[in-house]
Image 1: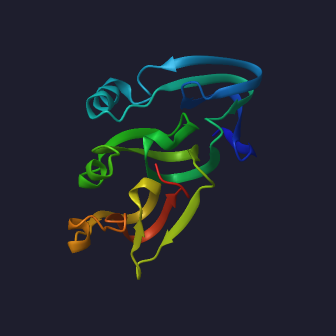
Image 2: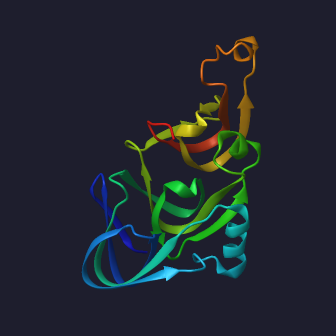
Length: 205
């Protein structure tokens, strides 16, 4: 497993020792040592996975970095957070993924009505296994605990991802105020129940 660490809240350092790391294309801003950068045509998912991303429009433009030394990644001065996975699965918006260990497995899964209505697409990305990944957000990433006793409601435009034993559903609130143009602007939310964590950003897309 590669060593991921935050240099500043907007710069990710990854130490490589004859290892591989996947990152979004163009995210490298510097490196020390000997590195090789190659476009990842299949995104580490094989031909079927790459075709599924093409069909579902849940594309990831990725590059593979290999070598010895330290490589630095960033994206549009956004804040970066490292999330370790220990044989877990994370559901994440692909537009928030910066880099991840080559040992982790990514896939595409159906997001249903919530993605279509929120404008984020019908599909979302999963990443699972044992290793590190880094995500970026507009503002510091916020971690919210989901308790079995109390459901958690999240604005879809602030949503980044979630992990744990969680069920997700889409809640749409329509009343007479919506009909006459006096809606609060919060007419739909994601509802999470179960046990786990949800990641959001303090900004809307």
